[in-house]
Length: 288
Image (cartoon, rainbow, N blue to C red; front, top):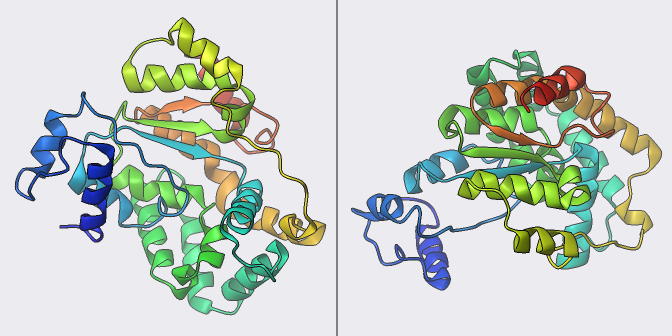
């Protein structure tokens, strides 16, 4: 039914999931029947933006709740690059500047990529169909064949989320979180997560755990020059994301909230220059 289906079933078996032995014929029924008994967790920054991911998940389970974490896209690229270098040993001889320069070269020398990005930028932030189709076109280009390019293209949230909005998201089953706020305001963030997943406030024991640092995963890493963008390349990336992300991000978030998505954060200084920032947060305050 799905690419990598055997791998996914093995993943369920390792979790002890009750549907790990289900057949193709009753797999979806098993997931639905056990929806309140088991939470199957998966976390990755590497495939959410694939155009087929929401379709595959819809085939597996149309009732799953999803938490998506978004961070300022330039910083996202730096952090993800650092993860691959420090945790997986990738690109030992290439700096993040090298990868970014190759990304821009791929965009600027391929007329198909340039045209596809412009079509996406020309879509109204409220035209989900246009945005989703544009992202499908971008994903079909050779630009997306390499991890190096995906490192930067994965930050095009407005386009990538449109595919999920069109094919998968349901009211009350999506929580979009500002990852900066997640780490800075851990107790508030986890209270939101628990209310979203379980429909209840945090227990005192959970509040203590969230505040204790026992679940703290943010690790300070010594600055290494190759891990940090130079000022000119950072500016170039910022201008790229300004056109393709930041201008329409808060309208996208407001529309998703109107569609029934939960929201947390997005009121910090990293976002305050984005169009729609004040309107988004004013509406958030009026809802409380």
